[in-house]
Length: 204
Image 1 (cartoon, rainbow, N blue to C red):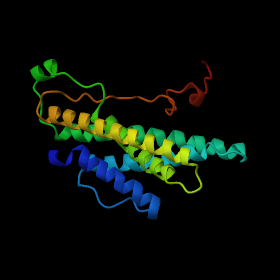
Image 2: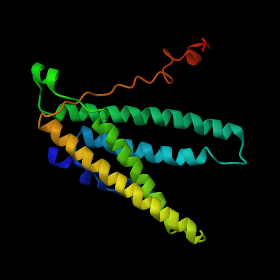
Image 3: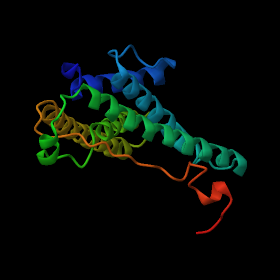
Image 4: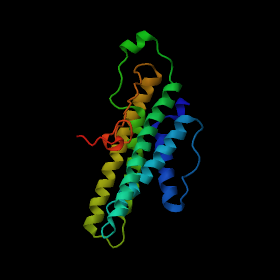
């Protein structure tokens, strides 16, 4: 399983999903078996939906009720996206070698979890796809295409750097040189028991 958890495999999955959905509504081939890759694929699909919902939320000349509906869909989808980040980390945790109490006391952790890094890699895949389209868009000015091409190159370098950092982290986690501490986000705004605007107390 560790051999499949690397930036090359993951960016390939992301690319296949993005290109597949934009060409034929097909999520783009199969992914390796297991809870980790299942959550990874669902996270990428969630980011795809969010990308296009965010575009729609900026439409002009439409009824405000439509925008309000889109905003609520964004809110629900973003909650799902964050849940899937945690699901990736939880699934990965089950694959890692077990640590002793002493190792848990001394091994450093990371500021970003693997799931969060994968989420960012998926967003970068979307940016690369759409920026590539802008760099070749018919009817756009030469200056627009030039700027888009420069941005595309920068995003691609950022993804490469993120992938290298991810691979290093995964190596450290499986090699017991670093420990995984899952970042529990405890989003309050969607919880009817925690958000005053949902449980009826509109205090600020």
